[in-house]
Image: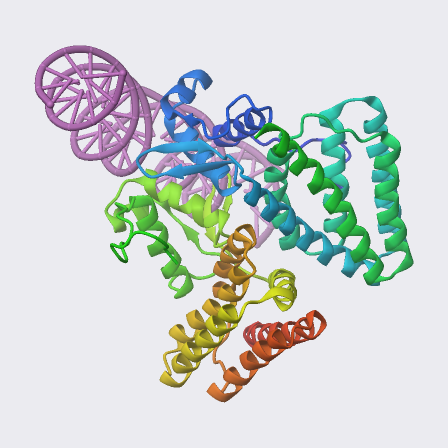
Amino acid sequence: MSSSSGVGDFTVIQQRNLVDQVADLLTQAIIDQRFAPGERLSEVQLSRELGVSRAPVREAARLLESRGLLVSQPRRGFFVRALDARELDDIFDLRLCLERHAIERLALDASSATLAALARQVEVLCEAAVSGNESRRIEEDLNFHRLLIASAGNRRLLKTFDDLAHELRLCITLITKTHESPDTIADSHQWLLDALASGSPARCREAIDYHIGVARDYVVRGIGDST
Amino acid sequence: MSSSSGVGDFTVIQQRNLVDQVADLLTQAIIDQRFAPGERLSEVQLSRELGVSRAPVREAARLLESRGLLVSQPRRGFFVRALDARELDDIFDLRLCLERHAIERLALDASSATLAALARQVEVLCEAAVSGNESRRIEEDLNFHRLLIASAGNRRLLKTFDDLAHELRLCITLITKTHESPDTIADSHQWLLDALASGSPARCREAIDYHIGVARDYVVRGIGDST
DNA sequence: ACGATGTCGACTGTCGACAGTTTTCCCAAC
DNA sequence: GTTGGGAAAACTGTCGACAGTCGACATCGT
């Protein structure tokens, strides 16, 4: 990516803020369900455990609030977002909204390079699926859909999806097991690629509606079991 | 909107944080273009002027960053978001994505009460238009589209629109004059209502595509004049 | 005159502390 | 056993201060 100087691959030195580090740690802890949904997070306790002051913790918490992982009540503090069935429906409905828009646009003007990149990502996803590494499979699945949206060329749309992706990870934690075989995963994503290659927006819409509907059903079934 | 208790409209008592107050003041200042696009905001200067410490200013700035009104560079500070032509396109494309989704859904199952509420809001908008109060007209216009999306019943979709609305206000500041007569405004929104009443998703999509396309053209023309 | 280097000022990142509020816990009263 | 009240503990909101870093200007060398 870097152009001129012959020194080679210098990864740009960026001293990471404490805010970002705390935000990452908290995000991972929430996704790993090391906090119970609805649990209150104490600023002082977190700052003690992490060995930092309260200021970075507060700012990180605000960041996670804007991403939908935490909710705040004035003078009460921050709480881990607990999703009910309705919010879950809303989240998948918004996901449908974003991905429909992207894939319908792509159907009309997807370059062969774009299709190739998507096909490559499906391969990566399949590798992750057969490897048995569950969290990696989830990330590669999200990566495919992220690439789909990124290919539409609208950065604001991509930013919205990235925000939503955090909540999607929160949803996915509700699923106890995936029940999906690697073959099923491969097929369902290949169908999306075929629809894209056909160039028909209507067919793409059908494909993405079905694809996200299946994903949504898995999560709804997960929450149905537990509650 | 509130349902049961017979005590009437209690505006929920919330002692406003300094953070929220600062955020509102900054938001208004940015929308009023009292800061130049791209201008750097000094935390110490702001905190001095507002008579508060730096902590609330920092947190408010992070809030506005998540809303797209500010951008931050590590160790450099916060800068007023400056929109280029491409970001502008992206914003209106996302708006189209959200409103299409809402109106297509509404076309299938809009209650008469919903249609009536939308019609009422068009009247309010028209009043604002003939009154000549420009900022009020803008807000009532946004309120109509907000109501449209809210009527679809997806709160997550509405939250996304609310975030985007802040950026839309930023776009609108680029327009020097509106050029739109009250009659034009009334007609263009009435067409949306007629499309909704027809119950045809396809017709709704056409209507919203045209409607947002016109709005986008106004803004693009505005940025085209200035640069 | 022009580019590189050293220095200075201003600013952000982070911290510890204080004040006011919320929550919890204990005890008394019914 | 349950309810109500009150004090103490814990917590959040806010503040002022210190240290590290960035940008601008002056200085030096060519």
